[in-house]
Image (cartoon, rainbow, N blue to C red):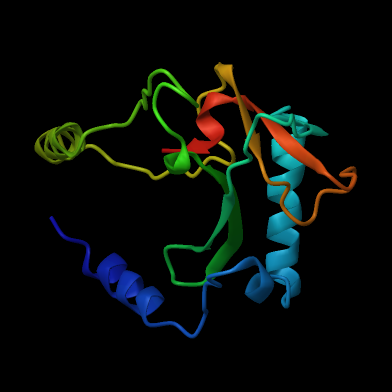
Length: 170
């Protein structure tokens, strides 16, 4: 059964005056986004996602991308501002930069089945948003990323050597 109150709130969120920045330079103009960026960098550093090193002569550093999203409460008010930093793994070449890929992702048919079962058995569903949720398996290959702005301990000429598989955007 459709909850029209929630649907109306969702539509209000879509047409709200809040704007999600497209670039880092747009985002850093606002305190709320600067805090979100720092929160993301702190979480990635505390999870030891990378180490800063000098780029070896025979290696190329891949780029990065900032993704900015506004998370809303059910009533349409802003819950928080979320910044996510991802490595541009799609620029890598198979056999040179990596040997295989695997991403643990739920298929839409599985989600539809769970929603159907919840409806048939009259179960309540809740949404959960987790900060920095990705696979923490160590990389076997050496992957280097251009250091993003905002890193406190970066020296000139240094890059980020990625240590965790889930950080790379396929």
